[in-house]
Length: 96
Image (cartoon, rainbow, N blue to C red):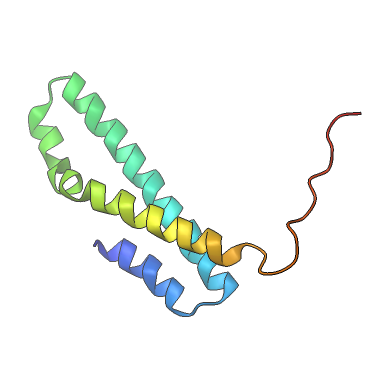
C-alpha cells in the first residue's frame, strides 16, 4: 500500500463521520490521480515513447491493489454513513 493510501486508512482509525468523509475524499483524490497517470501512460504508449512510459511501471504494479483499496474504503464508508434507523428519506416525486 502506498503512503498516500496509508494516510487514507489512518483517517478511518478515528471513526467519526468527519474522519470517514475525509478518508473517502482523500481516497477519491488518489483514484483521480491514478486515472490521470493512466491516461498519460496511454498517450505515451500511443506515441511510442516506451522509455518515458517505463516511469509508470511501479504504478502499474500496484494499480489493482489501489483500486481494490479504494472500493473497499468507499463501500465501508458509505455503509457507515447511511441512516442507522427508521426508514430511508422519501425521494420527492419529480413528476408534476
